[in-house]
Length: 252
Length: 352
Ligand code: SF4
Image (cartoon, rainbow over all chains, first blue to last red; front, side, top):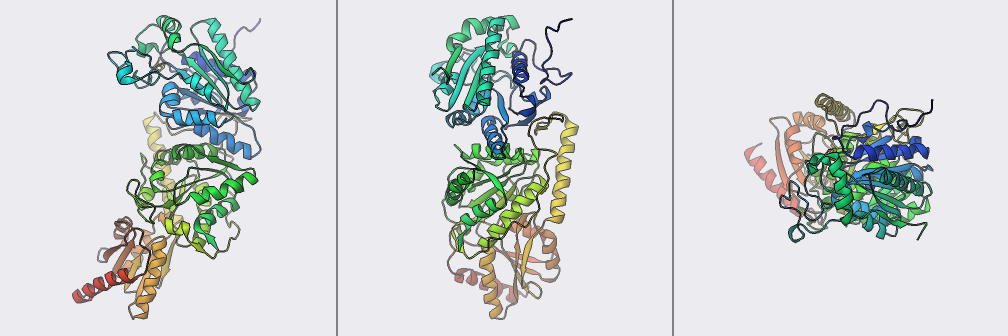
């Protein structure tokens, strides 16, 4: 018999994701685990987990892991990477953060890690709201978006504009790779996996800060079905957040 | 001759500190300036962080690798780091934080001050935790206690603070830069270096299980109890036959020694008790002393932060007066002596 699909080795045995039904976190984590398997990185990796819906990521992945205070994942990752380096060891270090963690409270640490060309990778799940606390408006919420703290919809006059994180990170000279991907169909899931793989490979090659922003669904707080959520990403969110590679040091 | 700031930096390197993260703030910037060139030459990790928040979180990450890690800063900027001190205490991640105090509250100014006693020993972070706090009174002690801060921090897997005031940071004294006297601590059972040939490890403070969270805190406090039993340090000066004992920490300890000498010359039996560890506080020894000596004067360059710990430690029938040294005022002892004279006049008038 031929094995068509296996749970990645990096995912802990018998682990069950506690995400809401239809949430894209599960897909994103599976892709990350697959890429770590394919690149043979699991035993040499340190994961920096963050605050938000993915807070207990270490319960799903068979990786050494440290929890960062809210927003500080890239600073914690910087310390880990540098400390191992002075001990003569190259460790693979990545953060897995939500948009609130990476681009709101942690924007300073995120941008400066990119500017320093810190040789780490950050994965940012952008679902355009603070999911864990019940769907409040975040800096990534799009204009017009109704959330529990923007009941009339986000408007630019009082709330300002959404942040295009992948484009900002691409502007930093220390960035080796910055892309925005989505998970609403198989084609895009494969593209997302390729982007994650490239980001991880660039760290392995010591090229600097690599970044993947993943547009992801949050059906619970969007009050949509999983399918409607994916339609919303494909047809609405990609207008504010176009998909693509904004920086690739090898093509520049 | 070494300045306090440079002495601390040299001591850190001598005991194997391989990672430093910092952000400039007077009066401690020389620590980072000195280390920036030294560490680069030695291929160690020196990062000019974008903020104190980033610096202390880099320390959190770096220390999880088992490296010896130091951050230095001052008062208002240490305020910004309180969240991570709380995390590191719960995570049991060791690193050393140097606080060269300046005057507050708020921005205050760069005048020497001792107003971070509370910040350090009680803490500004959330939850039940304690930070080991060592308080040097000379440049030599800056060196000795930097070694000790690294050692205790590693031994107990807890952050440790070296709490010095601005004067000490800037003052030059003759010192001996001896070797680090403490043994290395084996950390191989908990550090994060990749899950190879062993199950993955996690370091986190999040604990959604009520029982487990309770027992985690109990475990931390068992450790703190050991620290309180084993790691108390203090200096006693002429306390044996003293009628009056001054209590003071840090540079004020040194200052108060000169005052003792003055009164001894004038026939008053005065002694000095100087806590070196502010947490754990030497309350047991202070209580013993107060069984015999009944009159204490606490001198601090703040509004009386250590005072409450002194009062708590003393026997019920002992008296404790307080002299507030104005911030930034390190000049002569005349004013303090005049204040003590007043206190003594009252004491002898009332025959306390
Ligand atoms: S709240 Fe949203 S992001 Fe969080 S688990 Fe549920 S669907 Fe996913």
